[in-house]
Image: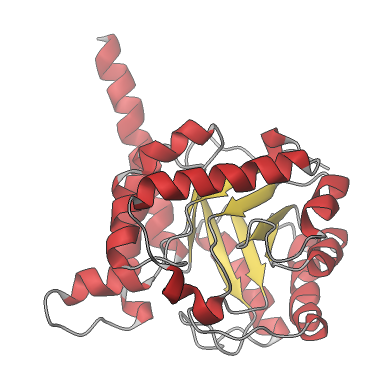
Length: 283
């Protein structure tokens, strides 16, 4: 299999939720044909790759069974890959990841970083595909109870290092591993903001960085202000693009977003500014 995809700027990963209960789009793409069309629309809007998932990981979500996750995900992965899209599969199950890779997925994005299914790391190692190790402290059903930190940045970096080492020890080539701080997973709004403010601290892990802030609760809390009500998830895309610009300036490998156009514009502007800095420094 090919190694980790690379671009000359921060990439944009578009989200395709093949679920009836996503926090961000409420099942809008649950039908296979609609999901495939949406994925291709994201590519047309500027997505460099699309991340297909069949299980909601919103706070409090219960798991779906393996057969249902396969039914949702595999046809979408197969059709998008056949149409030429670069596809990632968002799953915590090794069996789903294996079938998705066979159907054309080029990257496995596991929000548990291999912690939910002991077969995941060996499967990814055998397949030779890139792997996203996200910071994770437990399943969605009770992850909010685990949002307790004395030093959120230091602890997330340390816990990600453990996940990274576990993946490498399991046979995954470290050059194919991406790390993700897991914004919103076992974290409150203050924790998420601190991590965005200190994305540079994640560089000490020595691996490319994926930032997935799109439409998440902490953005809703920022937009609500003191005592206000957070806007619905779909009204947080401008705030998402702001984080995209920050992540791109911090050298992130990719951002994972629901609405692609604004973030695609943001990463290109960030790249142009970076190039201008280099030119100005040479004058």
